[in-house]
Image (cartoon, rainbow, N blue to C red; front, side, top):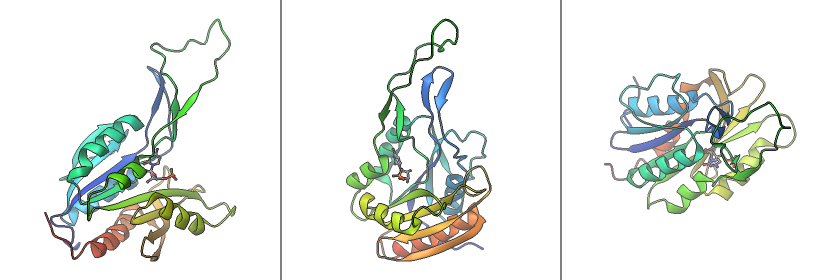
Length: 229
Ligand code: C5P
């Protein structure tokens, strides 16, 4: 049986990948399926948490039982949903793959291929939602970020992860090793869980539920003494 160590904890998890529209039928997207975020929400609910899942384009996946879902498509919608839910939450987990850039404008009708040469797409930066959540966090609120790192040998993912944890000011950073049949579009995941207290846990290749359990073990321990509900 799973531990019931998240009873009374209000958790918000973002999942999936945002889609930034080019026109009414096209978008810039990414390979995130939302499976890891859904697993985080499912396991948190099983351990007793009150869970809101902010789900970006994960309509193919079942909604975990007992979990409240807010559906979003773009980074702007995800940002609004997170800021709406965050003030009531004890724990925020940003597992969604948020687009760093969006097209400067969305064409009001389908971009035509006939007649003219293709236009370059101008991109503008999206706000970093995780950084905003950390800036606005309320006392005692715990914030977890994700970082996708390609384990391609060009530098040390842990070194990058440590720097990112400090830069973003999060309590935990899940450094995800992506690529090579890992993380995206597959049921398995792996990486390291880095804590703001200097802790470091390796998560071997395994199911997304396993990674979720490891993350909730650490978060439950870190929040163990705090008031509930
Ligand atoms: O800086 P980087 O994009 O690697 O950070 C990844 C983390 O930041 C993830 O937790 C992701 O959900 C979050 N993020 C965000 N807003 C963005 C880009 C990333 O909240 N615009």
